[in-house]
Image 1 (cartoon, rainbow, N blue to C red):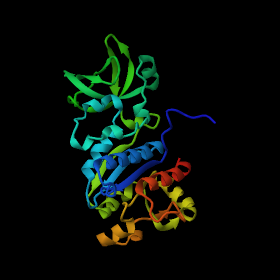
Image 2: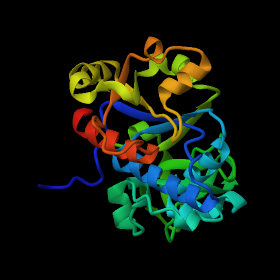
Image 3: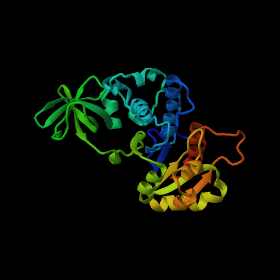
Image 4: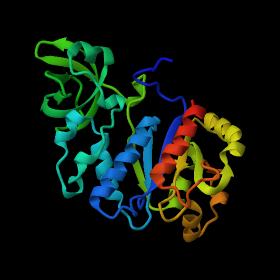
Length: 288
């Protein structure tokens, strides 16, 4: 069996929604940081395109976003993230090792790989000089709308003199999976559902949901037809049904599928990060 690297992009956009109290069971910043590291690894391992959030109390959305931003940033660019109290234990975050993080540092390797993230260091007229984590800086000719400190994705075109020539690209142009991205934070579970309903199939996860074996065929077919899936997870101490009741609506009236991905679970409660691994492992075989 051969392993493809970099891994292919999914044809169906896979996204995850988490509550902003997902760290509520972790008593210290150290343990919260470790938990974010586990969540980030799950998202990258199973090629999740984006993670979005919805507010629940205690709301730790800012902490979650700060830790994830640091975790998802390529190692050679982390030095540009200001160190704050929230990042005190950032060294405990495991290496993400997504394709954005494993780019070669030699020129020949970088040209074969093709793509890199960089930081704008200097503006020179319409051009910019970038740090792309290599011996050479990169020259970006068409950088009219870019400012010093901007984070950009570029394609490396070749070496000319002291600079690597590059051009801006959108991530959709990268022919392989890149890394997870951090999306919006919604004010509530209901707000998330209303805003995301047209963007892909919504699937809630709950031990009270329909067993995956019964929902799988139709659910996957609909997700492929709609071009994407958003998996919505609950919190450590409150599931989606409890959240929906608290917000004054019936979950199954608003979400097409509420699925139990771990039928006959052998523990009373499954932690969110554990549910992520279990659910995404199943979908990895089902969602192209």
